[in-house]
Length: 93
Image 1 (cartoon, rainbow, N blue to C red):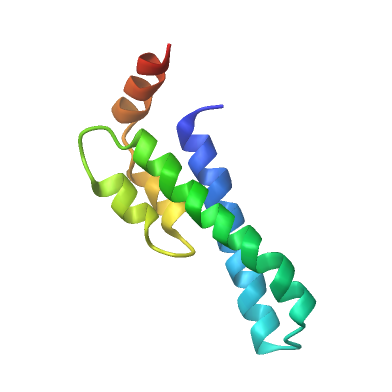
Image 2: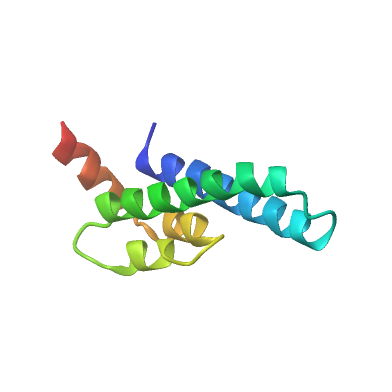
């Protein structure tokens, strides 16, 4: 799996969990849902930032985009250039 796909998947999980938590807060506010989604969202956010730092290359734009809660992973996956992603893959081999 490429780093861009990883960022997209983790970014989607982060966005979905945030949307579900906000929907829960705006509607029924069930504490069980908050207890489940809170840590999942926090973990997804942390993994997004760590993945973006590993992919970033010489610039800072990728991981700075990843710091934006909710949509950061998706922005980071779009911001990372193909050259950065390919170079990281080659460095790992």
